[in-house]
Image 1 (spheres, rainbow, N blue to C red):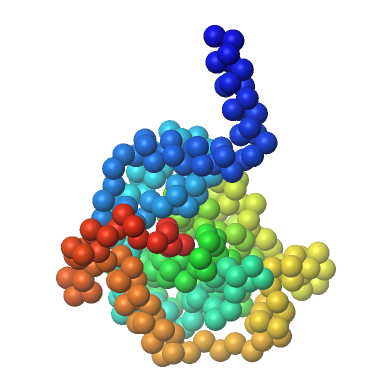
Image 2: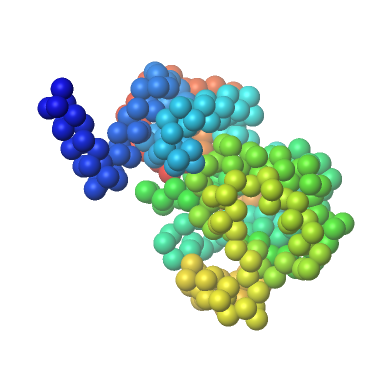
Length: 295
């Protein structure tokens, strides 16, 4: 018995000294707990994906399994990978949410949000639009990169353009529950004083890990500006975020880009663009599909 104890202790010590071994071990545990997968679930549940769910649940396999199963159930009904740009294009006409044409310093995809440009009333469509852009941003992450950055410009924001607290809560829940460890940082640039009242309510819906990634930036606050500089090249960063680049959202150009990405998404997920059904050839080859960032 003493031999087994020593071996166990040695293995535990080895994992403590080499965290990547513990990570691999936990991923394998979660993989075994989930059981055999097929089709889109197999494409979704890469090792990188399982690792993100484990990180979100502090490496507790049972909790990560429950969280992942809830996501798979949500994806099977909501079908975020099947949303197409033409379904949500109206939401994006003002440029209130779009994928930037630049990355942060480590190559992460950047989403730009301008809540002051809110142009629609349907909360359901607004969430659908965000989910579409999340899926698109992940599709465009560089290989090996799992996270993205958000830049939020509050120009023109007021309580009349603000989303209801209930919608904010539902949106946060979707992002936290079904897109764990996707957000690297969210910069809230010059939010008005009246936003503080809304923030005091909304922040209670966030888990601590998400809350810590939200950064308030004010041009006159040197520390917050320097933090943003550490994430972005000032030559790429738009002037509305304190950078040097001039950026003008062109809805037609962006729509063309999204139409191209829709074809790319359909090819990745392996379904026929017209019917939405899995193609046999792709389903068979899913087991050896490359591990993408889109998880």
